[in-house]
Structure formats: structure tokens, C-alpha cells
Image 1 (spheres, rainbow, N blue to C red):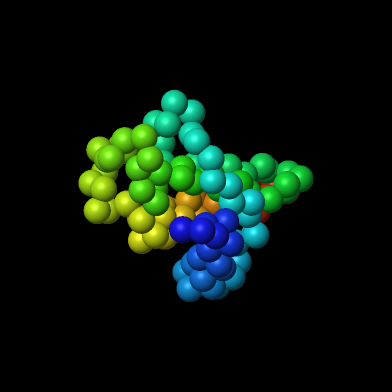
Image 2 (cartoon, rainbow, N blue to C red):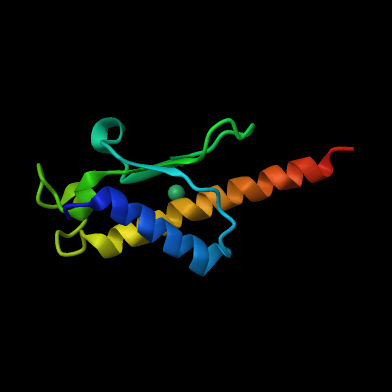
Length: 109
Ligand SMILES: [Zn+2]
């Protein structure tokens, strides 16, 4: 995929519209190796909103480069559909964090 950076943001925009009524904040989406290559992706938010959420996707989700079946995922499963599912999963984390933050604020006197 030549323009996976742009595609990831377009996919995020679709997911945000389709599943979250556009309520998720616009994140930074990076494609990078994860620590020890152990996880396929991660997401991270800060409580004080000083920066947008970050979603990191491992490039091998689109197809293994060093291993044919990274994370023991069948090579035929790797590709855009798996990235879509992974991105949706990370968006659910961001949504949950935002919800729990709202909950915390709501609990304050
Ligand atoms: Zn997760």
C-alpha cells in the first residue's frame, strides 16, 4: 500500500463517523515497530488533552516483511481488512478512555 499514512486517516474518519458519531478526537496515527515487535498496535491518550490521542500500527499488519506469518497470524489474513479491525479496536480504547474521563469529571463536586 503506497499511501498507507493517508489511507489510515481516511479509514479513521470512516470509523469515527460510522461507529462513534464523529465524537472521537482526531488522533495521530503512526506506523511504527512496537516494542520487541510483540503487539500489533497500541493507543495512548493523555488526561489533560495536551495532545491528541496516538494510535500506533505495526506495518507488518499489511503483510510480513521479516516473517511470513508475524504474530502467528496467517499471511492471508494480513492486509487492509485486518488494519481496519485493529484501528476500530484502538478507537474503542480511545472511546472508553474518553468516557471514563467524562465519568471522573462528572463525579467531581
Ligand atoms: Zn486492545
